Amino acid sequence: MRIAITGASGFCGGAVARLAQEQGNDVVCFGRRPGPVGKHVLWDAADRTNPDISGCDAVVHLAAAVGDPRPGKDTERAFREVNVEGTRRLMTAAEGRPVVWVSSASVYRPGPYANPLTEEYPTDRQRTAYGRTKSWGEGIALAGGAVVLRPRAVHGPGDPHLMPRLRRIVRGGRAWLPGPDVPLSLTAVENLASACLAALDWPAGAYNIADDVTYQRDKAVESVLGVPVRHVPLAVARAAAMLPGRTLTRYSVDQVTDGMVLDIGKALGTGWRPAARLTGW
Image (tube, rainbow, N blue to C red; front, top):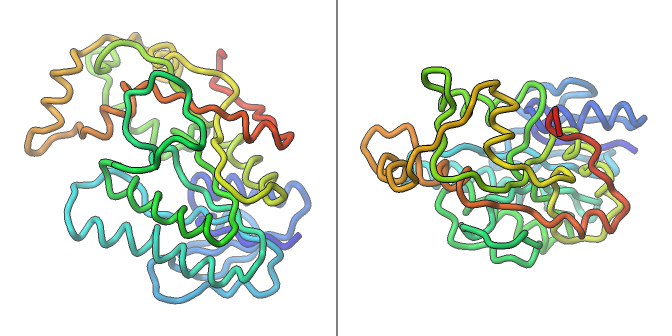
């Protein structure tokens, strides 16, 4: 196949592009910068132009505005332009081709969660521009017949997001985490990449994508940082997240305290199997 991959210069998109080429596909990387393999076609999801994907058989869309910046109209507008309007332009250009649209478990209503989340769990009341615009964007993708994948906390070699955040919690040879230990799902970048390509043949709809194990937060953090975990009272962490000039946000506190575990039964039902885990699990 000739596969168009948007956002291929990024951590997740690059993993998808490399695996697609390894599987014998012809790869075309759409983005502001070249991907690690294949042909590069310049396209910025924030520009008001549709990508020219003529000659491509299918699309994997990973280009996105990500992060947890300060809230405000400018932030909301910038995220919406990429995650919502960029999706609209991509789906228009796809013109009936198979599309895999990579979303995020951040679209789910904030927790805490007593049970694993299926794809039917509500996708509203998000606390960040990222969560809101990803939810709106995936609505456009689903209406256009795409397969939508919802990974959580993607990890792996070269991760530019999760590991830098975790390193910031280390003080005095300890990793300081808010609240008690909780179970959670994580998604290895290798598992996300394999799901992206397998999903080109899946029925349209939303699918949770995660490793095939429920991690315990404290053990997972200790295994990747190599230092013991100590706990900060949850009320103290939430109060700190409200302070001016804060380094913590309510979203970042939620991510490590809400106990989000994804039910991946729907994806497993397609025959896909996640093969990677954190070291030591």
